[in-house]
Amino acid sequence: DFVMTQSPDSLAVSLGERATINCKSSRSVLSSADNKNYLAWFQQKPGQPPKLLIYWASTRESGVPDRFSGSGSGTDFTLTISSLQAEDVAVYYCHQYHSDPLTFGGGTKVEIK
Amino acid sequence: ERQLVESGGDLVQPGGSLRLSCAASGFNIDKYWMNWVRQAPGKGLEWVSNIRSDGSEKIYVDSVKGRFTISRDNAKNSMYLQMNSLRAEDTAVYYCAGGTGWIMDVWGRGTLVTVSS
Image (cartoon, rainbow over all chains, first blue to last red; front, top):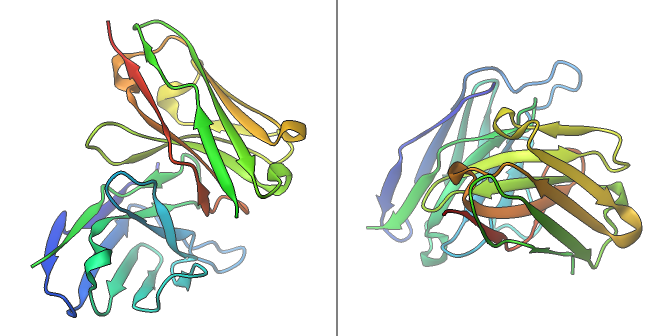
């Protein structure tokens, strides 16, 4: 199975500052068939279902603000919120859809400092 | 607007059974892979199962193999999860989610399954 490890478990960032979340996969999620990284990021606010933010490691879902960006390849990935807003308080999960069983990281809780 | 609505969650005794439903509106699921993802209270996300758009392929996480069965009825624009031999560790909010390929870009709000005596 692909084990997804996120760091940190939580972080507190001042409004307008940058937040960076890391995700490491135990195996590469880069497909040799299409040269795509099968890695997504989700945002989950309290009492709500997860919301897709990023797929193919760096493609922003329609309607997602451009302060959210994804980067990385192979086994190491990053989600960056360039200027944290109050509405970004949430838990963020990385997710690999390269192979079954599909797996998620443990989540990173983002709060306002 | 694409929507998914889950139903069927309940309190059930260990060893019992439950059938969850997921109804889609605003789009047709017949081109979508559909998934069940669960979240135990205060915990992270765990993918449970998915089914190909035509129902020809079904995949499960090891912990539910032989106990859970995923199915779909594209004519009714719906998906289902039959859960048998339920255990306390199956207690969770169960979300249905779908998308192109294995990318889950539309989610329901979830239904709570509680397994307890």
